[in-house]
Image (tube, rainbow, N blue to C red):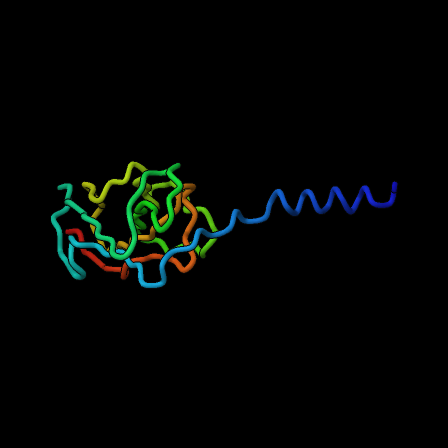
Length: 140
């Protein structure tokens, strides 16, 4: 029995760091940025509205477990994390865990990319990922 203890400890450590796993999403679900449009030029120093859309899936706040639902995350100059990974929460990964479908955003001058990704009740990327097309805007 004593020889099994190191293996049991190693297994427990592996389970503790394993990804949480993905929540399934309908294969035909997608989200989109309704405004601004790809290629938009927006004035610097002035907040602008970004609104989100979603098809073939529902919006639910964080912590709500319901089939075929999730909430929006806006990625600014960032790439979508892989399925099963938690979406970071920082200035490049904005969470809309109350179920919001729009926001006001102010960005510094320059070119920026915007993309939406849906996350489940724990901010985990669905499988398959439910993402929008990545758009580029210019702030000047």
